[in-house]
Every structure is written in C-alpha cells, then in structure tokens.
Image (cartoon, rainbow, N blue to C red; front, side, top):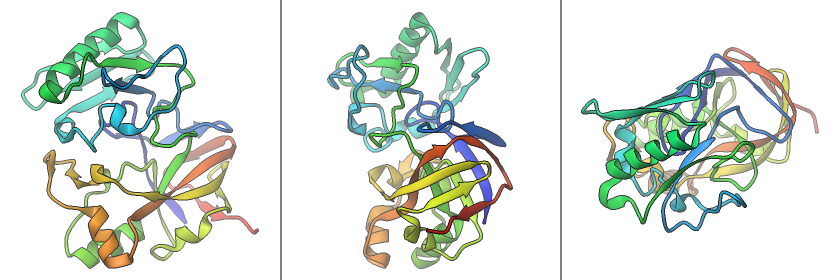
Length: 252
C-alpha cells in the first residue's frame, strides 16, 4: 500500500494544507494538526485547564458551513496565520501571540455573524490538540473505499469533505476496517489502529461551494449499513513518512 495524499489542518474547521512529508512522535499527531481553534463564547472551554470538548463547542463545519468558503494558511516558521474570505477580506496575524489571536478571533466572529455565540476566543495551547477525538490520533482513508462509495451514489464526493491526514491506495475497498486493533507501519512510524471513523453532518458541506449538497452519513447507511469512512490510529513509535511511502499491516 502507498501514501497518495498527506494533509494537516492547522485550524479546526478550516483549510487542509498539503504536505510532502511529516514526522510524528509517540502519542502525538501530525505537527500543527488541529493546533488552533475558535471556541464559542458559551463553550466553557478553559485555557488554564484545557480539557477535551465536543466539536460543537468550537467553530466547525458541522455547525458553520460558511467557513468552508474561507482559505487559510499557517506558516510554522513565522507563526503567521492568514485567513482570506471570497471577497478578498481577511486577516493575517501572528497566531502564536495573544494579540494576534485576539485579532483572529475578532475577524472570525465577524465572519460567523449570527452563528457566533457569546464572545468567541481563538486558542493555541502548546501540546493540546483540538481534535474531535479525546486522544491525539492520525486519520487515514483508503481511496478505494471512497471510490466504491462514489460509484454507489453515482457522483463525486470530494475527499476534502472527510478531512483525513493520510489517503492511501493498494488494498480493496473497506479492507481497512479489519485493521482495528492491529499495528501498521506507515513509512518510518508505527501506528495502532484504534477505531473506524464515524461520520457526521460536517461531510454534508461541499468544500468547493461551502454549501450542503449531499448527505454522506445517510448515503453510507443506505448502501453499507453504517456511517463510517476511514480509520483512526495512535502513534506507538514516532518516525517520518512521506508521499509515496508504504503502509504495511504487521502480523498479529
């Protein structure tokens, strides 16, 4: 099997950033993946004690489809985060500084308009991952599973709907569901598959139009009897992996 696409998502809910390679550490995720998030004012999120909260406490595609129209880019060397709207307005700030995060929060709150609840705050907390999962994971999807699903529904379902870190080929569709509990070698890193990914209403949003134009959750249930696409895996031994690297399921 082979890695075909590799992504990180620096801001929860915003743009995928394509990578050529990455390096992970034990117990971690892809560097800068879900490192930033806009917490809604009524979320109760406390940066002094950063506990995991469900996604609806943050700006997210499940609740805020309009954010799919934003384009963002994070430069890890400078800390600069650029967020640009379709009309050309936007914000470019140091996301690693308190003042920069205040300005980013103000811009996003204005963009969300009536979907902003209370006074949202934009967060970066070193070591904390704003994941939908309670523990840091890497998400992987088999491109053959996506293609099989698209064939069943008779239309394209852009892969960016599903916001995976790693897309791979080289195994039959849905074969990856049998890897739960197994260890996999991904390039130079060792991962353990922990669970299938249960999909939510975020996948309704077309990343090219920022409109809800399909219902993958219902489509998956209708054709397969479940709403799962992809797998989550925890990093057991850190290492580097890149586009074109192999993925191997290790013997039990």
